[in-house]
Image 1 (cartoon, rainbow, N blue to C red):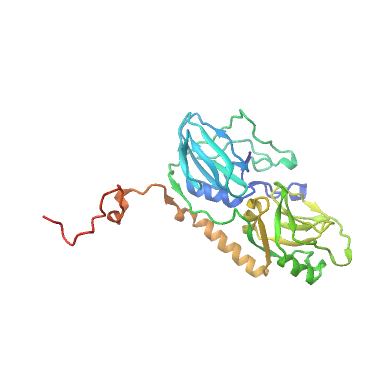
Image 2 (image 1 turned 135 degrees about the vertical axis):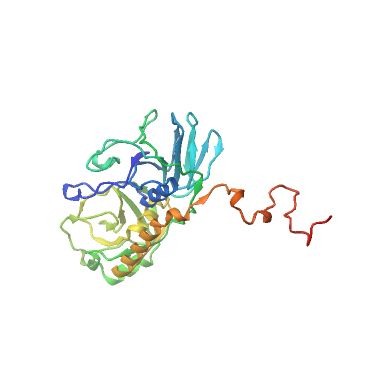
Length: 328
């Protein structure tokens, strides 16, 4: 468990990658559920949550990989916003799907900014994982939205991932590039915020004529092929320089699917042209802007239910449309 936000930009020349949340989409979902900015810090939970309490009533939202969650024994809906009463115990268990879950609070987690963000960047030695007994300060919460949910998508079980050519795709023979797309790749148990190892079915992938490379700049989403032919997808805390050839780069909007894939999940990579990739990213940005309009109430208000008589709300009662006219 670490405190994360959207990370740091403009620091690659100093050797510091962006960092921030492994699943950036989960940050936008939580922000929409609480009616606040997606730049606020949250608690990221990798595979397993913990127990949390607050000293004042606090709005919360839960997004990302679905996890077992309760407040004082009452089960809560995931991908939704709730009120956590002062002194109550929020218990978050293991992930049911995916890898990274997120706990958002109204106003966001407070902290001291370092190079433009408060998120922990463990590979760079910035911040540290949360430990038992830690107390976090929260920013003031000026909104009141709670009791809503968003429909979840299918990014927690692997699946298709769109990629574009990198500067070094041409170092691989066309047959290797085609095989990379056709080969099932399974997420290895070895994965963290720096990178995700992928295990191909069959032999790995090799650069044509075994060329050596001079180290150069790399970025989040690049897919490096190591000397033994194994693909690694670079993630939020990746290094900024590397010497392994990059066969492709994952679209930013598909990186959450890679981050959330559990061990053993299968990912299928497909090349698209850069023009299509730009259009897809624009569509994703528009979808994120529309998240607030996709929110649904957890409990429907009877005063707003125009189809109220169609609900059999008490066992044994009738819907009310069984008679042509009311018997007298």
